[in-house]
Image (cartoon, rainbow, N blue to C red; front, side, top):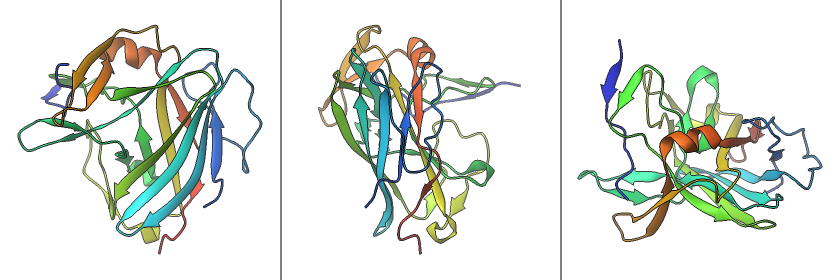
Length: 218
């Protein structure tokens, strides 16, 4: 049976902890311990720190575009107000605690095949020119709680003291000029650009940091 629900959807409109690169397949393999050399034609994810900051867990990272084309980071996640208005949340990340792992993601998550939604949740995009680096932070509240656009199971909660490793996944579109973007503004008037779900979910590539140690997890 297909389930029907509404997503929080698009309106009209410190130390080096890890490094990953994006090859041709959709999902990049986790980086080797201590980082690795990257080819000039890669998009590189480098996590600088994973640490507790007061009542949050913060992951500081950078994405470097080594390709000859501009890329689009799918990292503009949304906060949904009580009235349903969407506000861009520059540091928000999805949290997946299933399977005993902790995965933070800033990407376009596909709609499950058995779930029907009025409108998929599509992140806004950030353009990264050839040779440029985008410096970012992903910050999630503690204790950790499941935070996904399409929950398929019970919400889980984990104290940071029980967590030893965290993974970060970042989605991007490898050719910024290949897809048509919708122009709009969020509820605060911030200009945003969003791709259509179908072409974006097909074109998306995912950088995966692999397991990263957590500093100050007590």
